Amino acid sequence: ASLSLRLVPNQEANEVGKALVAFLTHEFQKFGSNNELSVTIDHQAEPWLGDFNNQIFQTLEQAIMDVWGPVDDRRRRSSLGGALKPSRSGDYFGSRPLPATSSTLANGSAATPKEDSNGHDPGQVLNRARKPLYIREGGSIPAIRFLEKEFGAPAAHFPCGQASDSAHLDNERFRLLNLYKSKDIFKKVFRDLPQK
Image (tube, rainbow, N blue to C red; front, side, top):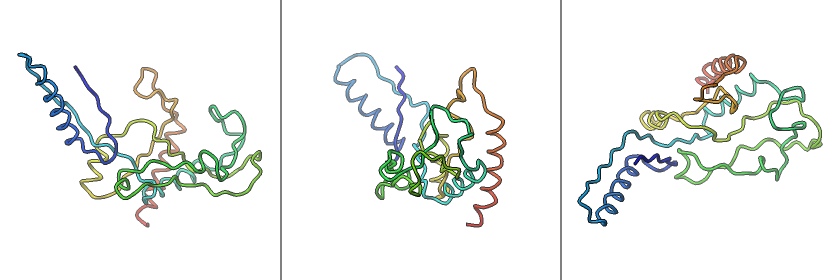
């Protein structure tokens, strides 16, 4: 049989692996079988969830807003239907707390970064920079948590693609526009981050 487990922040892959082997061995012994149980862990990686309050995330966020520019009603939006509306106090996205991150989980929960409430008419299209959405979509590179722990420094993920890119499938794609914008974002981040 083959198992795949997904870990969450504050779980250690080694400890979870040992607990799994101990549990399976204990349960198998209850059968009193003459068969043998062999458990092999082929791959393990620590969970990672970024802390959007760290300087790297803040620098990335600003660079993304600068490079992609303001959102206006001429931009193509997938599945939004109408004009973009500002976040208001009490909105789903304006008040929903994000789960804690790897580096903050043990010290209490973190709140979602809020957009400024500006009192505009909800039907009015705003021509202003919008913060990136922290949606926790997709997987993480297994080495990130290891590097974060090893160097004692925070990390950030910067996805360059889109949800519609069909990642890891036969028809995987990547827009050239995203490639060029990502290059500009990285230039800004590597220029600005050392100054902070």
